[in-house]
Amino acid sequence: MALPWLSPAIYAKWHPARLAKWGLSATVILTLAMAFPIQDAWPLLRFAAGVASGITFLGTASWCMVRLSALGRPELAGLVFGGPGSGILITGLMTSVMVAAHWQSRSGWVAFSVLAALLCVFIWPVIRGPAALTLSTGAPKPTQAQAASMRAQPVPTRVLHALAYGLSGFGYIITATFLPVIARTVLPGNTGWADLFWPIAGAGALVGTLISTRLPVRWSRRWLLLVAYLIQAAGVALTLWMPTTIGFLVSSLLVGLPFTAISFFALQEARREWPASADSFAGLVTGTYSIGQIAGPPLVAWLLQHSADGRGFDRALECASLALVAGAVIYAISLWCWPEKAAGRN
Image (cartoon, rainbow, N blue to C red):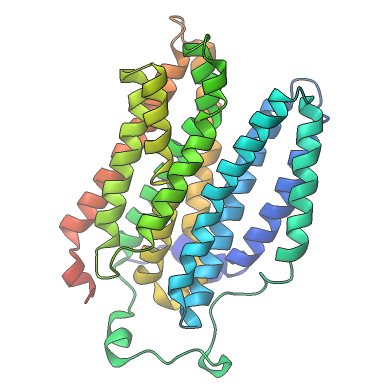
């Protein structure tokens, strides 16, 4: 079965390095724009900036993973995936300090946009061109066993993987975008804690990175993704089951813990499923994740507008949690229909 939209040629032009640079540019511009928003445009700018940052992370991570693997240093990928968790933690704490120092929000957005632009100066010349390297560049030649396992997997497994990863983007973006707002709504007397829930999620992401990058290579990435989805789904649902300070604290940790791990495992699985098209398939799964991110906030806005009982945020969190559970079910189906041994994992 051939699906035209899975052709490598379609995605070759928007390989991960190009996606990362577009995402970096958009992130800097949109962050600065939030300091001077047009009337009623701030939610749209916040949403667009979130999508841009997600594309940047996935583009950078997928490019680095393929390039490091080609150079024979795949273990260094953990440094890349430690970035988002560290960034969330540091900027979250910086924001808390700015609030305590009575900074105007405009000053904070300008400061972060300038910081982002300065960091781009160092990154821009490094990330360029397709990540895959030919043997003439000095990349190590694969062993016979590795070459035997480097074959494209059945098309349905790739379709299911792309679909499940898109659901991850949908489930995560709803919670990541609205967690502080929901916390302030539910815990009006604990606004100080509400400012810390996002940095706590970043700390969880950093811990998740340290764990995920040290797991044995032989472990099935689809099984790991299934478990990671269920952990994040439980974290999202916990705010509904336990709308207290402790509940939000544990929820933040559980939502953050598998955040970068899911991307790490998903990109590893993409390389396994279509090794000859590492850049293009990484671009495809990045695209489905972005679509999931794009779909999340408008759904929340619609639910808030049409929930007569005032439980729009609850409905949104339920949708996010169910999306993550659905992603886990998709990986379970994929494992049932195409077990790892049959798929060529040694």
